[in-house]
Image (cartoon, rainbow, N blue to C red; front, side, top):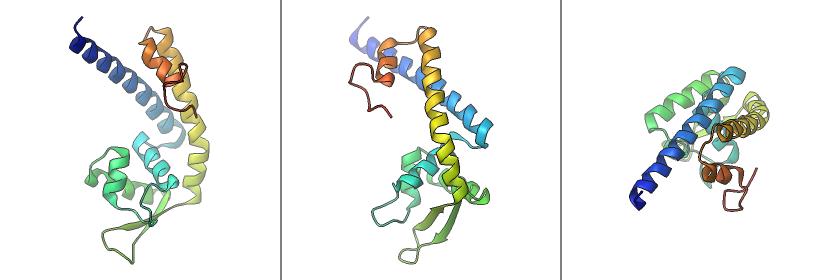
Length: 152
């Protein structure tokens, strides 16, 4: 197999693994919390304070963090607010930004949901290993060889 073919084959293998893991996490979040993965990711980003150094949020920053367009992110923020997971208000310092605050319900959802996601990913990686998925990619996810992202 040529070098280019190997690269494409590995990329496809990565895409399949990603899709399987993402679908498993999406199912669990929906079953347990009625949330989509992107909604949960948005809460995580907001909790981590990934907005800006000033503490306010530009919609395009949140959109970039969760991989959605600005309009889709606006709809997501509206859904989170309707579900009482966040509160929003126009920022006094800049009309382009929105002050967003997590509610206690969101904080509890994150507290319970984070270990659920970890367990779902761990279990899905085990299933994929049993099915013979690409072992190099699985080792990276498990961080077995020290070259993957930090475990946690």
